[in-house]
Image (cartoon, rainbow, N blue to C red; front, top):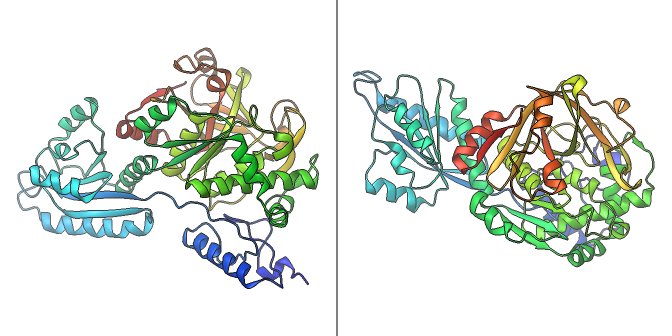
Amino acid sequence: MKQNHLSCGIANSSLTSSPCLRCSTGVSRRRFLTSSVALGALCWMGRLPVRAALTGSLVPLPPTPKAKIYVFFSGGAGAWPKPEFDAEAARAKYNKYVGEMAAKFPEVEFVGRHALDGGSEAVERIKQSGAQGILCIKIGPSMPTWSLASGLPLAIYDAPFSIHEWMYIQEERRAGKPIVHLPSRDWKDIDFAVTLLKTAAQMRQSKILIVSAEAGARRETIKNKFGCEVIDITTEQAVAAHKKVDDQLATEVAEELFLKPAKKIVEPSREEIIKSTKMYLGMRQMLADYQAQAITVNCLGGMPIQVLGYPCLGFAQLCDLGYPGACEADLDSTLTMLMFQYGANKPGFITDPLFDLSKNAVIHAHCVAPTRMDGPKGERHSFNIRTHRDDNSGASAEVALRVGETITCAKVVNDDAMLLSTGKIIEGKVAEFDDAGCRTQITVEVKGSAERMLENWSKDITHARDARTLLHRVVFYGDHTRMVHHLSHLMGFKEIQEC
């Protein structure tokens, strides 16, 4: 006899990270132990609410990469800030704040945390720590701290009146050294510095799966520029992963993630949605097998969609969990989504843009969109389950994104640059969608000139000028131009404003 879902204390419309499956009786000891281990791992990773109960062996997703940041304090009393300045007390306050940051950044290990003012011994100490980034908090004027970076990304924070040598920092940055300088009275900019350093470090430890396509020569280029490892997965491997998914588990996951929470199910059958759920679980298994953080699938070229189902629903769920899933084997958009996931903790809506100059707007549309655009802990947007619009088959999500939201539109291009623009969603209700084109649609009034954006579209793309590369962009909630600007210095890519 199966228990009612409500006995788990789960609201079907508020799934937070991973699916809560039905409680059931008659569970074997082996299955119970398997489920308990999976549940414990997921709870430890913060991916599953403690109130959830698993009855199937839902494989835990890989952990988020850790970052090690070396923190040191530079400078002391002198003419600046003032002769009687208590540098020791200032260091103690900053050090206390760094200690408190550990709770905000569980994926960061802070090492060092002492005074350091130059010399080969200091450089060697940083190297021996194994740090992937350096945070220098300048208390007062001191030696040129940028010389300690030794090629590592370096963020320098100082309060106004702390130092005189700030103009030299800008010269070093312009010379191409991986440095950001954040002079500010607001200590939240120390948090921002950590976020930047963390993002660069996490990118360099990440793996991306490309399914039913090959990365080719880009594998090495991406590794050298962004640090990510790209792994080719064959069509046969994807089909095998799909076949291994337990039918009962797929049915339970489909119920909890898609069938029950959907506002409406318009065209797809229950069987089609379960087939797409098996695709989600197969992709999840491949991520776990390779300990990868993102996946992109050649869904419109190499995959037997009639057998596997479209990956649209699976991409939406992976993005909701903080693991980018991108369509059409689009490595540029996948890199963009991964960087923003680490830096802003928000998923991306990969789109086929088009223009409406009467509204100074870009229309962003696609048949796949996250339902938690505010991040894994955000509320789920209302969504319908529809067919994939290009061929009126399969299953995809028609998501009502938030009207009035400021957005950033971005994409990595040429493996050495980021296209960037901002705007505001002025249309996004399902009732406003055009019946042509893709299922999820938003109209974004751009900050700048949509006409100039149209005329200059993709003019800066010099590599792989195919239709997908020229067309796709990725939309994120919020204005993240400052983050991209500073990451471009730390990671060595160009920032290109599109309008």
